[in-house]
Image (cartoon, rainbow, N blue to C red; front, top):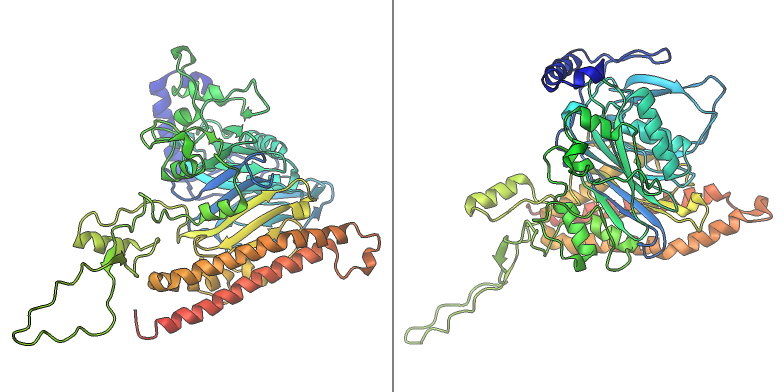
Length: 568
């Protein structure tokens, strides 16, 4: 019936409008024999501006690792925990929920709604539970960004939100290809109930960029496409559909739902007879330009030889960097606020350097006046920071219009947490897959290495920082120092940058030592004589590193409060 209705564009529009209204009013999921039905809030996101995921193929990285990453930008929960390897009896069910991204701790179930259930597998992998789950013990890593897409495709009856798809594939999959295929099967069978989402899935061999949307109110399935980032390329997703043409005759680099072309034709968004090529971003992304400042900046920084300009109708889907990308370069990109570039929002906030001491006495009578003093040296205002508030920008522009031109930076104060994930195939997944994790603004927070084999985190990281101020939350330990630093950025900038650099150098310098010791324990012929089991060793190292960061940021908080003892 749906197929015949879609033949008529006018009827289709009226029916779709009515169904969208009904779905918004009643929010009732269609029942299947093994599904428990619950109402869920309307969750559509039109044009989000939240997250950034950069992907690096193994031949494009300096050390041969495959990388993906994620800044979870927005008011999402930032507690994380380790869900252990699981075994389940036959007939077990895996319950599916929405509302998991705003809880305060692993035990908190407020706001969660069960949208259905599905058969559980006999065994599941250990994985990191976060707002968007990102890594498992088998060496699979995931980044994410929301892009919205076309509202007409949203279907609230779909059982799966994207974060639950991520959880299921981390529980069950070892490779990116397995994960993509499973995600497609879940969407087809149970339905996709989220707005448009991109997940970037990496294993030790390759990284894929996948984009998912619903199928519209008449079908509770979904439509999706996935493109492999070439091994010697870098890709990026930043809240805008990026996939362009797809060649399903090349399954080594492209995958898609079986309805990817049909839905576009039925909705009247693409006609194969027109001669116009099918471009995913254009067909399913609506009228938005397929890139913004973040995509342009990253590609231009890594491949200046391409001489990209912002007036291009479309950027390349991925680029070959002029030189191989190091993990340090990834860290730097995720701290980026464009300071010193044409996109620097604070470049006009210049003030005369303050002269220390009192001015001298005026010249005596009859004595010629001294030569005019030279023009004062102009410096950036000590109050100007890369993440100034909207109120401060408004004040500056009220005094002189055009002084501050806000730009969406990669690092933002509104970040819940940030990950840079490396999959390194020359090591066992437990240590070869590592997440460099930081809560709060990645431009201000030091990262610690969280290995896939870690079985427990310091308790402070399992406490959310988004509900209220809590002294037992790792986020608030970092955030307090970070926000105080911005009050007098001219004085605190070097202290913050030195802190980040010290922990970055510590982590990278110690990494070979940790790997060597892990492999000694892992390969030991007398494991009972070793002081640690392999997982215990990694857990203690990552935990000690994370606690050292928290201790340092507590120290910085004390210093910054002392600096402010006389007032702002």
